[in-house]
Image: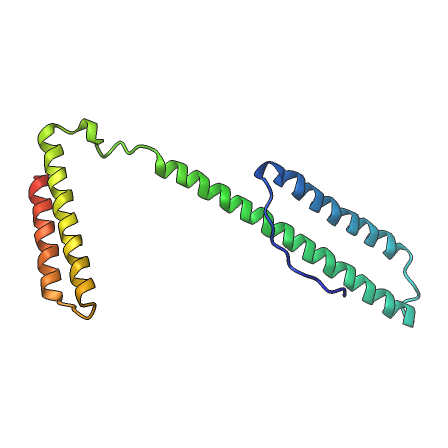
Length: 157
């Protein structure tokens, strides 16, 4: 069998169907040539038969590899399409959560305070870590997390 090299390249999404059609056509041509070649097979108990079967196997492997490549391309496209659709669904507005424009002034202020408190906790954690990366005081971390959770729970009620 001839040596093969694996390539990876990108094309515009608009050209993908033309590219897959080209690869399908190439596979179809190879199958047709293979069918034509099998019509003129040699005597089955000869050296020519062994050579013929070796060539037949090489062509079948080539077709199989091309079909596998095409299958990967189509599978990758369908995964991309599914992921794109999922991203679009996820990006849509949630009907369960209010937007900030739907909050009253008191709720908006509470939200600002929570964000500021969370920012302070993060800034403190970063400064402690920068001053001594070896410091790992689980009790302080647990207390700060509990305090933050309590404040969130209280503001939601």
